[in-house]
Image (cartoon, rainbow, N blue to C red; front, side, top):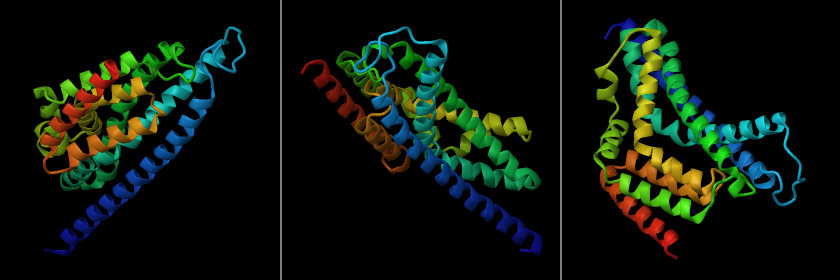
Length: 260
């Protein structure tokens, strides 16, 4: 191994270290923001006439501000949950980018992460709009109707057993084939790779995230349940079996909520 190979290897290792630190910092900031946002949502009425609220038509600026707060809560939740789980794909992409285009490896990797976060931000916006549309069912803006929560749990439990779920789960567990399959050397291609990987993760977890819509994105028990299940099925060796077992647990819990 000559000197140039050693320098290239050290450069890639530094890039991977920077990626791990950046992902950890961003995820930690999002968790902190999520806790703060949850406290604000829990104490700030989003619907006119809710407990402690003054009964008057809300202004357009008031509505926009509340919608922005709900969106930021969802965006922070999606980033805090999913960005650490994309670390394996990000590191693999960084190493491939270092081999194929070392002079722009950092920029390409940053665009990969931005593409990944962009797709999840779109999902967060959609979830925020749905929550805002249904916010009158609860003073805190969360949709906590038992029927809706039970149906969401049952739907998520059934989906855990479907071929679509396990196909997307396999892509999340082993992202290298998907990254190599459609490799493009352009900068736009790097962002596209991130968005495609996010689409696979979204296909794996979207119904679990909708459980949070029913339970409330500021519900710590629901967040912990979803986070632990997603982490276990993506990171542990028997991830597919864990997904099926989690599906049974969700189905049982949803049935218990529907038929107390």
